[in-house]
Length: 445
Image (cartoon, rainbow, N blue to C red; front, side, top):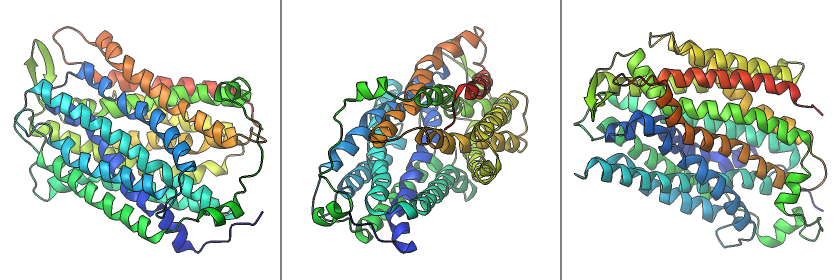
């Protein structure tokens, strides 16, 4: 079997450059979905249900894109057709979703339109995201994969920062940050527009610059004649190493916690740090989403998520200095748990930076350590399949948390009073503490 030759840095960069644009789209979605549906009139107790779609589409779409692209050979490449089609659909939907309240539809119809747009956006982002990981596997040798994934991680964080900051930047330069009831502010709409424009530029750049190996050359580096034991996924799950399940248990509490963060940070910051006014709506006390305070708070959430991303990058440098992966995991999750719980008590918008830097420590560990611990315990064939199955430990807890979040918030809410969304973030902190305890049952290899 021939070895894949070393690639110059620029080629490694080109393979992943489109990921920058995809991550901008993902960050805009993460930071603004609760804001958009709250503005359209969604009750805080129902917000979590809108968040079921992102992980659900991820667990459905990514395995299919992987399986289909494995069998695809075209003049344009093997993975790039899926990347390009996914990005093109994402661009179209990004221009539609923030306008859900601008077409004169009733609130219920606008939310249904927004939900349908969100479904297509999640599907297309997942379709565009998966090929980047696969192209590294196809075109980069083992020695350079560390560098290739480091480039991808850098572009991921850079794209996240841009997406999180766009609404704040547009508001700062004078674009309207408030709008009539049920209408999304122009600062958010323009953020999605510029994000869509950057996304298609980045993906076109990667599509033009990257030439995937044709079948004959690909087979020289990845022989297709090797026979592997044919085992279905259920059989592989039964035979999965104990590490798969123990790390998966930690993953459950971690990803459920972050689902609560994405869902309830807007309301928590608006009520706690910006004193957003409230009003009675259908007999319930809710935040006034047309107020300047609420929309300023929503922009500030983008800043806080950007601070979290910076904290994650800085802590990622510290993690390798620990003598044990498990110790690094425990410390990171405890710091993140402290960050979440502190949101109940901090009401200064700048002091909140400390909370989100701590949350970034947990995020850094969640992105790096689970896959490291798992791959160290795997041997022989089916490593790729196990990694695909392990993606379920990311998506399933988010689906569970999104399904139960509204019921839990109802239990916290006193009739006639504002829903205490900050309680959900305290619960997220408790989840991280539980996850830290569960780390002790993981067997390192």
